[in-house]
Each structure stands twice: as structure tokens, then as C-alpha cells.
Figure 1 (tube, rainbow, N blue to C red):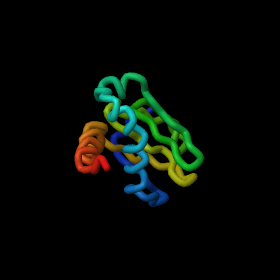
Figure 2 (figure 1 turned 135 degrees about the horizontal axis):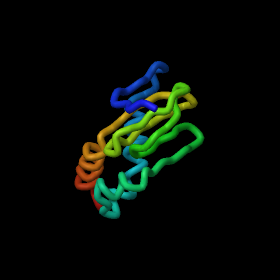
Figure 3 (figure 1 turned 120 degrees about the vertical axis):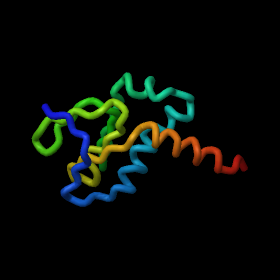
Length: 106
């Protein structure tokens, strides 16, 4: 098992799409006021028809078990292509909150 801190993207998947998936994944937790610590304690993850995303934890990617910093939201598969694209959870939370402030109510 190795600790992975770098992004690995040999299939050139869309990094912006991966970031959007990471933000969408934690958005409901940000909206209800969860702290970063609360979000990272459970090692949340989601497997969808076209992607895999998780908060910290471990995952087998490229036939190797990788461990990730608990304060990273990691996309490990996008459009059936393995990848390791990591996003800082604090940055994502701040971006989600900023977007929410700019949205009109009606």
C-alpha cells in the first residue's frame, strides 16, 4: 500500500468534470453545515455508472492499493477510465459556499 499525494491521469480524463463530481459529492454535506472533520471521519464514497469518488481512505487503482489524505476528495474513475484526481476538501467547501452566496433566491 502506498500513500499517494500526486494526481495520476494517464488517460487524460477531464479534470474540470472530475472537480465538478467532487463538488457535487460533498455539496449536500456543505449545505447542511457539516464541518470538514465530520465529512472526513466517515470515509464517504460513491460509485456511479461513470465515476468513483471518495473522501480520503484507500482504493485500488492501477492494480495498486493507494491511501489518500483524509482532507482530499479523490476521483478514482471517470468515464470508465482509472485515474487519481485529488481536490482539497477545504477549497471545495469554500467554492461551494461562495457559489451559494451568488445564487439568486428567485
